[in-house]
Length: 94
Length: 513
Image 1 (cartoon, rainbow over the protein chains, first blue to last red):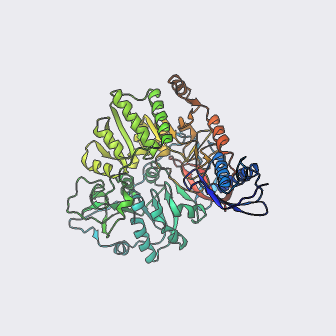
Image 2: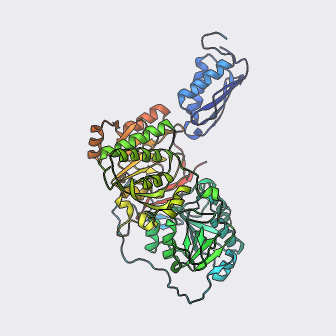
Image 3: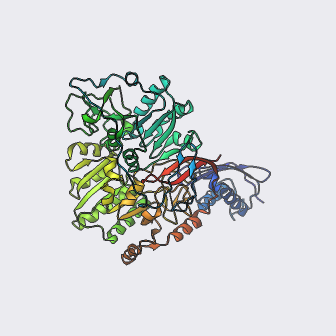
């Protein structure tokens, strides 16, 4: 289990992108999601973000995501980058 | 009843009445004779000019329950509708029917007039902006009727859609009622959608901010059709009336789609001398025109005519000699406005001549190829252009169903996904153009051909185009984006999609919270 050390962000507010801000948190992965496709893909976006966090061993984090219709791989990449910038390394050790 | 495209439509709809069901693109035929407006007379020396809308309302004794008509050539710059309805509200009129060829964000004040009962019904080819969102939420007492550009003159000629007063936005008018769209501070070019209003309304009023000396010639609408001329300070905001130069897209995905569409046109065998063509003003459509123009130049092909909403790009093609004529029902940009006033081969046409299915010769029937967009297309090739993927009204039927029905080949161009949402779906939310009139779908992942057109499919395969089954494109979209959750819809019907022949092809239900 790894913890987010500091606030960090990745991504942009351009069409088809997502901006993700991560902050240290407790009690699981808490997502605040804003999305133009929330009705159709809200649950899918939440799952993609949670999976990306868990894959890096992160279980407690506060996430703010502003989505402009990003595809799943873009959401995953933005989440991974935000976590790396927050001090979580893939296998580099935090 | 289940209609010819499998939609379950009630036989009777509250706030509308008995429904004539869609039976097929050419299955419903007219009967009887055309409707005529009251016969009017004029004496020498009679004065038509009236110095304000309020004065006109009092002079004519306009009252509650009447239907007023408007046209949308001033697009998002229009203030005429707002000015007229504000006077109606001030004078205490209620229950006004509005017939407006398309409603834009500028028409948001209508929300207040509907809430106050001043306006209680709307016929239009489409709604954009806050008014669209409000109507989707159930603003109107009955459903909005969405018609096609050809369907409106059909309904007027048939006497089904009767107008008490037509308000014609006149960028230039003289005191006798001759009207033109090509000059003045609110110049908008063609006034083609308003011609039927001038033919069938009981009273025809030209509203102008530019009274010019008599005689104004050539006139789009001549003085023998116009009862009154009302002067106002301004028709609207010129910035919202015409765009600057409409440009070909630089987006590589749009260019790839356009390139494929142009190759499909070449492979179809339709691109030869006399070629006739319509395309929209959207980025990819215009880019397709660019590639088609290049192929015409290379093949030394001289086209017959280009039709529809006209852009500067089509004007360039006319002046270069690629087409013999432009038929213009709506001028999209400054260059097309200027050209209409300058090029004798650039002709202003009525919506009736353009697209009315119930006359002996609408121009859409003479189209070889039309390129059109879509907000959604389903595996039966039915196209939605009136709502977004969320079921909220956001676009216009316009000439989409008319040109698709008329053209020898109808090409839909769209990206496979838009903001993650698959555009190719199992079933569109609001079928506007029936699949039997759509031949080809072009996306950045290849094209699909309507199974009813196997000969086209053969030609495309021979030409080396990437032909796919439409189900394959749908599956591909879902594999990239994931399957979207269904948007719940309410029960109440907020919009009727009227096909060009006057039948109801689909309905739009209230957007659920």
